[in-house]
Image (cartoon, rainbow, N blue to C red; front, side):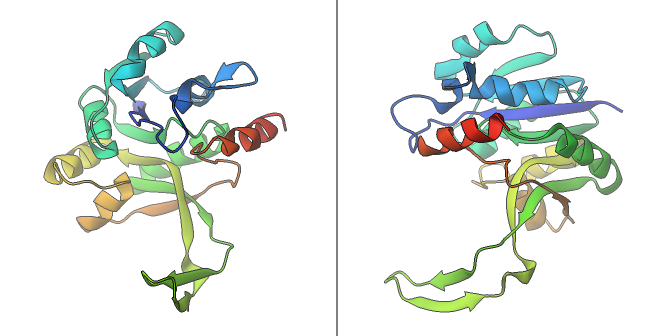
Length: 216
């Protein structure tokens, strides 16, 4: 069995500021290096980084490992993943946000194990906050029962032929995660328990949190 990973790096980092967050450094190492190194250590056969064209030259200078291929991302996350799927050769593929550098090796190994059995899985954590539904005027409508609620993280992983077919059927849509695409077509997707430390770097304040967590 061949395992591959697609690392999404096609975003513009608008919420972060006037620079691409993936090239920002934690402890003198870029975020994207932290992320990719976790998957290199997981003994994958191939890693594809689907990247914003503006940082492709930077990534080519950073990564020289022959297992790593850098391709041009798309206008949306869905497009970027599909571009990666066209360039990877594997039986099972893990799809991960480039801005989640603190994914644990243990979680990656669990995802690899579960996807072989279940074909479609997602790393998730239990929702601990009380969740409210609020209307457009800011009025609270109701409190939602959180006992069945989970927060979605990445990686999400799939049998390769399955997720390729899903992307081809839903081409031109704008889904924000691949499990949502599978669910829309009626496929079963299963949870893999994640860790709270697997944060996504979105705002500059997240850098401080990531730095603290990376030094634990």
